[in-house]
Amino acid sequence: MLDTAFLEQVFWGNTIKAYILFGGILLLGLIFKRVVSRLLSKLLFKLFARFSSQSHNDAFVALLVRPIEVFILLSTLFLSISQLSHPLEVAIFHYSKLVGKVKESIPITIGECINRIFLFMIIISVFWIILRIIDFISHVLLYKASLTDNRSDDQLVPFLKELFKTVVIFIGFFTLLGFVFEVNVLTLITGLGIGGIAIALAAKESLENLIGSFTIFLDKPFVVGDLVKVDGVEGTIEKVGFRSTRIRTSEKTMATIPNRGMIDGVLENLSLRNSRKVAFTIGLTYETSANDVRKIVSEIETYINGHEGTYNDGTASFKSFGDSGLIVEVNYFVKILENDPFLTIRQEINLEIMDIVRRNKSGFAYPTQRLISDKSVANDAEKEVGNDAMD
Image (cartoon, rainbow, N blue to C red):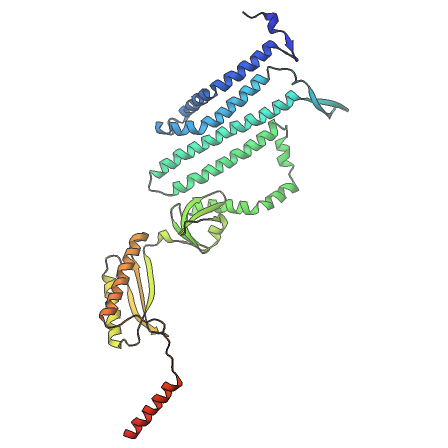
């Protein structure tokens, strides 16, 4: 047994017992913080056992171990330092406070500053844990949403995740103001006045984008995974966020469009089309006879309407006389919406059109120029005079 008198000896304002308690609490916290954090994570997971399957246990623990470790470490440091008195009772500055009608000088000690700092950090770690729990819930909901055919829930879960995390951050901010800085939050909110109006005006666009996000979820002009075209941007919807929508373009770049622009602009949901249109023109050489043009147009239209990948409403027609050739216009709709099969069908039809043109003794026109010199004009004139003399 240690001598009580020995433990009560004072060195630099603290007893040996206080130093032992300080070191023991700190050492235990550092040694067992990993084990305790995993244990607390598993205990918290039991609250969500009915909500999620056991397979999500590792994901839950992985999300919570780090913030719980920080919470345990901060709590351990706070408890260990609280065992000491010196130099915590030393005043570092004073401030004046009106008590009744008399101003009094209130000292602020090192211990009070440390208490405020630890309270600040502990509150942050608690809300960090809450945010990680929200991440876990959204992880489970996304997994369950992926098992259904409805893509609306795939879009709704990330949005609700951002919404709840934003609300928690605001609550955490006002909690810090109230408990750490001793600010009267209700008085602060009600006393904003003109400042509140200025903030509201500054946040006007953010509010419009937030309303736009709710409009997207209620009206459902698209869901995650749809191919859309808006303001000249074409791509696949990847995420509908709190403020903006992210679109993966065909060039694999990420386009971010404010939600207000998604509902105010002209939006085409290409995924809702029941077919894909192909329209183009070809030029036949001017040496092609009218009868051959009729055969080419007829055979192209017959082949397109007989193809299993198209509807029976394709058209091919002699459109006009171009600068370099006879213009034939072709229009048809492909039944298959997926890009790769669509490209295959379009290629088959284009190759057959080439064969049809060749079989009918024609060719494809391309821009040409014809040069007429003075010598050739003179030769043509001499030929005309000779022909007249023979006549």
